[in-house]
Image (cartoon, rainbow, N blue to C red):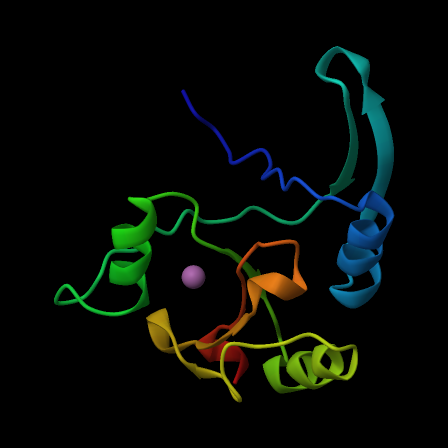
Length: 136
Ligand code: CO
């Protein structure tokens, strides 16, 4: 049986810059790098608590997911980091030059507050920051 989401792999053109981003900018615990000669890769890992799989589908056939499906026909859409102070995280990341898809957080699922970082700021990966309702 499937027991956990073990990891998500992101292909990065500049490993050092990407490690710095996830460690310094996002504050994730860096566990080190390792070569996997059999796969011809160098890997870097950051461990986080257990996560959730989100399936997203257009509401009433409209919106950004409808456009995404038209263009790409499904796929991994975004990663989401949980925050306990989304305003502070957004301000800190804006200071570092990150671009966001909106000026300010907006309502997400389960009464959370959410904002998305532009994929061009993160090697082509769309990253959501989410503050659950109990934290705001
Ligand atoms: Co999401």
